[in-house]
Length: 292
Ligand code: NDP
Image (cartoon, rainbow, N blue to C red):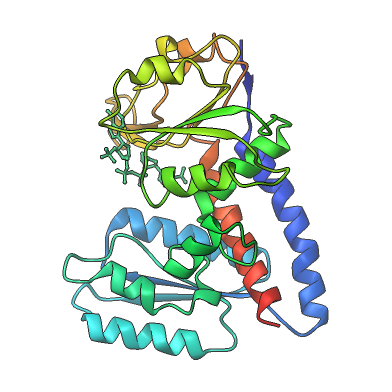
């Protein structure tokens, strides 16, 4: 039976370290500040923004929640971004995705000051990830996955990691991060996606499988080598009449069968999810330090 990787407990440990760094910055009269911009009233986005704001406040960060109506124009949003770029109390800026359809998200991301782009989506930060330049910002979910592995003492160095999914938010940056030439990485990385041939044959050769495809129960026992580590990034809604909300959240991995074969596995919820927000705070603290 696989060891359960407890993302909540590891995130708590990250917060303890961050509290120390935040206190050091406060001694220098700097309070790290995060601005989260939400356009429109998508309920899931609203919930994410609320939890980010709550966590910032709990840790003593300056938190600015900017809730703009769905009718906000591209020009208006760009000017709010410009204001935040110029605001010295704000070290990190995040524009909650997805914005309404009339907003050009790529243009908004490019308008961010890359030194405040704590989501790590600005082309300058993507380039820094490719170039192994540690002054850049790495997207929070990939960074959280790497930290989970390190804190769980799972050896990444020299391991064969198979990443399922190639999005710019998870799969691609994760592959780049884990193949970097340093002690926290040095993995041999294979990326598979919807056009990959013989996907299960490839995943069966992995020491570490990381799934980020958004398909409930996709990764089954047959995809996994005995003793492999399985990290489940997926968050999927499945109908559940027994639940008050009528649905429950599950990952990409068929947990019951895979946990019998894997040596370690993350649950959903309570695995990668809590690490994503911890890394957002971590990136904000890093931005504050670098902007000193
Ligand atoms: P995207 O939809 O942007 O990307 C999904 C990727 O999976 C694509 O590369 C796609 O391939 C691939 N894929 C889809 N179906 C299959 C399949 N049947 N076989 C192989 N590959 C497939 O999703 P995201 O990267 O944004 O998110 C992935 C999952 O992670 C989602 O469930 C999301 O909710 C979750 N997530 C969780 C976070 C957390 O904090 N825990 C944070 C961010 C995301 P192709 O490129 O060929 O289309």
